[in-house]
Amino acid sequence: MNISDVKIRKTFPEGNLKAIVSITIDNCLAVHEIKIVQGNDRLFAAMPSRKDENGIYRDIIHPIDPETRDEFDKIILSAYERYVALEKIMNDEEVTE
Image (cartoon, rainbow, N blue to C red; front, side, top):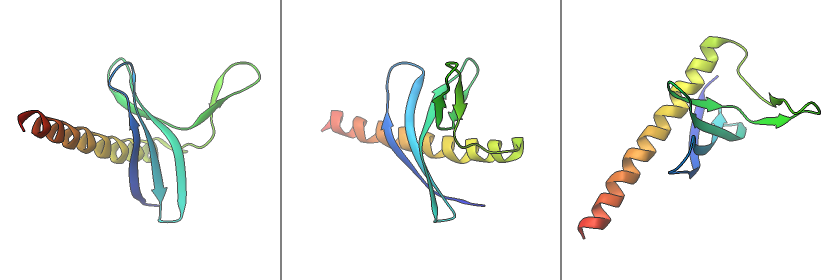
């Protein structure tokens, strides 16, 4: 399995929610509404979830094993960090013009 594309859909400058992301797996399966969240110790990718009848949020889709989850986090967070760095460069260029 290969994450073939990561799209940063929206970023949030304030608060713990940093971005909403979509990924494509093996050029044939899209997963939307992945959230990049600032936790107590680190950023992480929160899989799409829905609130059940007891008010508990449950993932709709998620990696089964820790190794796959780590790989998802690594790829998604790396794409987010590149996006933020590029956005900063573009904003710095606008200020200097």
